[in-house]
Amino acid sequence: MDDNQCTAVDTPIDHTRIVWEGDSSIAKLSKSILQSLAVDQLKQKDTGEFTTNSPIYSDPTDPIPVKVNQQIWFNIIRHRNSDSSTPTLSLFQSFASALHDTDHSLTFLPISSSKQDLPALSNKVQIKNVDNNRILTYFKPYFTRQHYSLSGYMYISSAMTLEELKQSPTILEWLECNRYSIKPSPSNDEEMVQVGALCFGSECIYREDLKEAICKHSSWVFPLASRPPVLHLTKGDFKGPKKSTKMIFVCTERSRQLEVAGVLTNLYDGTTKEYPNRIMLIFFLLHDNIQHDSTYLQQIIYNHEKILRGRNSTVHSRTM
Image (cartoon, rainbow, N blue to C red; front, side, top):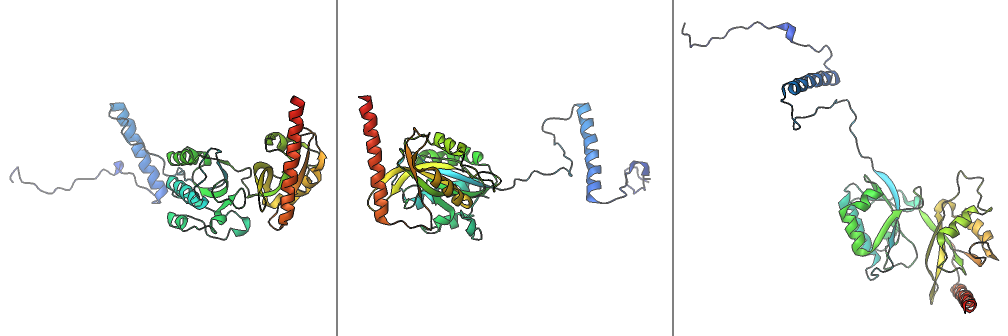
């Protein structure tokens, strides 16, 4: 036979070198493979062949981290020196698109707890099709007849935290260019609603001190509830049919508005209180189901401004 001629020769198999898996399940098979790869990596380290570019193998049974969308309530607030000529609807569509560009899984949820069966805004086509009526499903403005401001509450579902959204380049640029800021809502359980205004109180009252004084008052007790309501004070325009004036507004969770209104109606009844500065305040109830007469609203504004003018003139005369 020619020495260069190749012939098929049956090579005996060394069965001692074969590891048979008694259980062919994926988990056990993967574990066996992983152990073999780990042994190979140890040999590579001993021989100096292992580098930082070498693959690192993980146990296939280890849990894979999956981001779960979280529901977030937040406030968006316009800065005082911002341009107010852009319509609210345009601002909303622009901001919503920027958020969706940052997190493609982000959706806008209906604000009202009674409208949770309505569809969420989950893509740019839906955002673009929002009109001046539908926007109120996904955006709660601070005040009625708010046509050129995006200040208010929003409710979203996102795989990112609010802080991560705020720090993303797209949102940072939008907030800076449009002169807005965002922060977590006072309540992350439900929507905040406006329940009333504190008449005869200057907008210059430090609201955090006033809020603290209310929450520490002996009447701020709710024995039938697991916790007190969330209280939030804002300032804005109290609008009448002919003119408006600056006032402090009281906001709380929708499900707790009647409780808060009851306490504040009794607390701020026109008598002086220790804070603020022993001046009188009157709580004026604002509710979706209450329609105030236009003449009555004008009278409230007139009395409010008259008392503030008298108070300011008294302070001025004392400093002369």
